[in-house]
Image (cartoon, helix red, strand yellow):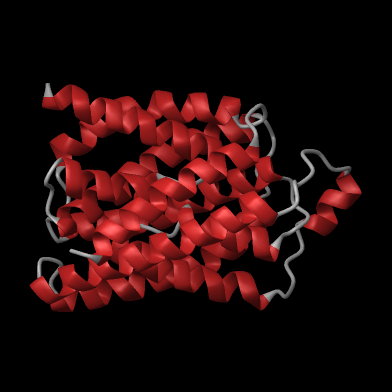
Amino acid sequence: MLDFAYIVAGFFVGTIVGLTGVGGGSLMTPLLIFFFGVKPYLAVGTDLLFAAVTKLGGTVSFARQRIVPWRVVGLLSAGSIPASLATLAVLHHVGPADARLQSIMTTTLGVALLLTASAMLYKAVRGKQLPRHLSQADEARASQPRHWSLPLLLGAVIGTLVTLTSVGAGAIGVSVLLILYPLLPLPRIVAADIAYAVPLTFVAGLGHASFGSVDWPLLAKLLAGSLPGIWLGARLTHHTPDRVIRTLLSGLLAWAGVKLVLI
């Protein structure tokens, strides 16, 4: 029965990721910690590889729809992957199961979720609806960041946070993309967020695996549900009201954030 619950959890999170670009670490890590009693360092390591494989499936789906802005993906990856490698070096020195580090992980994770929930709720209530389609010339302009250095700097921040907590590639990444590329259509924002997270979470996840921080049988069960889920979510992203999704998701993230901060 517990195995089936893992598969259902994977399907639920995979569908949310496909719809919004958010939910891999933001939802799965708290689910593993609170509902399944997984240790924080194991939850983070397992979730990183879960996110990598799940989002690879989503990237393939979006690439077939030709909506991945690869220039955006490249700029964010250039900042996030070196930062992830540097953070892994620190974790290797300290040890991922260290009690103080686990406390830092859960608190940082909680604060990140609360900030993301606030930003997402603001966008849902006050933000303007983004256009769904652009001409080729308009899309080229929309793919230019406010400043060339910002994707690298913010990518580095996300890379560090993702490696520590498994949160950020989707949750904070979407918010960063909306700020840096305000004219990019939402489906392309989601596609970019999912695509750049693939190499980042693979690097961070394999680093955690080298520490023994991955539960492989659990990972297989989660992926059995998430891969069909993200395929479904990616197909539905063009047909679901943005504000409804963001409002519901902000509530889930806020709940998880409060629980983690109060541990």
